[in-house]
Length: 269
Image (cartoon, rainbow, N blue to C red; front, top):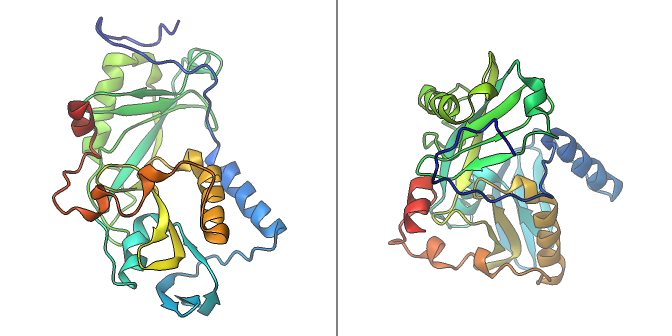
């Protein structure tokens, strides 16, 4: 079906016919616009320095002043432990700097969305990619292949090691996917040791609800936002989120062995 792939004889595949992709730039813009429609004030470039539970409210200390709220929702990615630290809490979260590269393949028609799928390669070294969309180029990256950083120490410079591993994989498995490199963009993963989300109230602080992304949350942003709003307003949600509790062993047991790297996940399975 997809002759673009050069697969080994023992490769197994799982195809989801109704899969797709979410345009991050447009989706973020829509979420912000809908928030404003419903009365939200969006404060750009306003770092949050601390959270404090004070009686029946929560104080949010920012560079633009201190705000008080009945409920606070935290979705801070790589800054999660910074804010948790102001509550005297630290979770075993690993932050890595990841990247994707855009290739100006000359074989555009072969990699159009109607001829080539979004793909993920599950192996000790995992990779993923997209058909031509947004840019006139294909896009791919290594999953969880970057260096450990913090929100303050991250750079925006490409990682040569991750880049070389990606090129070698594509040369072997999807050679016509490649072309002149347009550019490489970096991003941050924030991963609990089991690489599942955290979606829960912060222990000891029932008025503060938090989500931690696990490095794969964006495509679920609308649903996670709905769940967080239900937890904040009603104290419960209609969705099954037991696996994402903040008191599970991956968060609370210091002996829990991290399995967020692909080689560990594949080995465990």
